[in-house]
Length: 286
Length: 66
Image 1: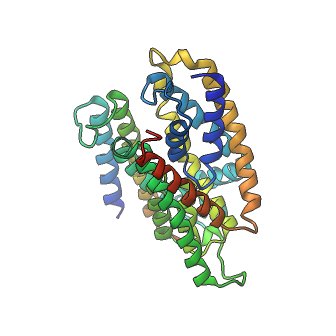
Image 2: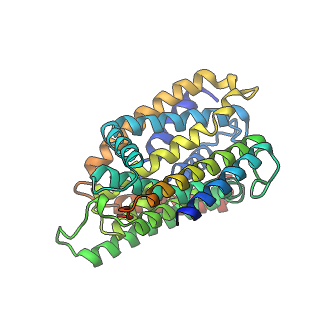
Image 3: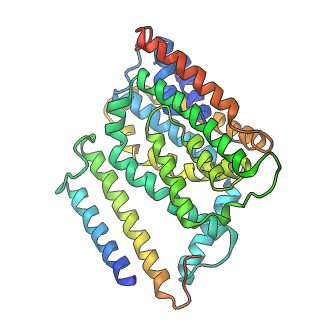
């Protein structure tokens, strides 16, 4: 892997992990489209590289939401020490994040590897990317049907019920499929439970943080694999680039979703998914 | 409910140990060897911890899932 490739993959990870366009799908499709046959996605050194990219992305998310995470963790610890729940806003958000993380934690451990083996090639990733776009269009259409064009009628994150948090968590688990975006699918679920775009995005990013961090931390042993040191510099360089890209992405998206919706990303996923599928079927990418 | 929560915590804790020791391989067949068992151990212990927290909330007379 060259430095240019490492930099490109790091930017791709940092941006596509948070934009609702599926990082997993893009890390399959883009190297295939660019004919980067020198990258062996199953090699220990590449897997070690991916671990560092995940850690860089997770640290960027924690840094961006550092005040919120501090308040949430403090409120959670206080409620456990107290032994009862309160109406504190951060505590309510915190327990909803815990409940929402359970489905993806369990399903991820069970299904992540078999799903990647089954669908980890360009054609399925392209189809799921297309489906991801259609899900975003459907989510926006349902939201408009619920709320109309007029603003109002939305609720804050802390007003989500526990079953709704659990459902958003289950929705997030669909992101195990390459091409389905973690932030996209959980945002759509949030919109359907009456969050506005900004709060749906914020909840989605907060919900994604422990999952991305855990994905990195649990794979840390890969950094000590025999061949991992071969990409040490590229991994450090890539982790920093992914972190910066993720930080800028979340800052941009939080501003974007104050007044915009998911449809542009839906169009992107449908178009790129359809083109990639045709190219995969014709054998141009493999 | 408190008894159920504690019982579940014990079950998850023991399951985690068994995964860690490699004594059970349920739902790990496709994994990448030992690292995958450690992942199962960590997830089982996190679930055990959550069950204990759930039990603690059930222990308070004024507790309710708000």
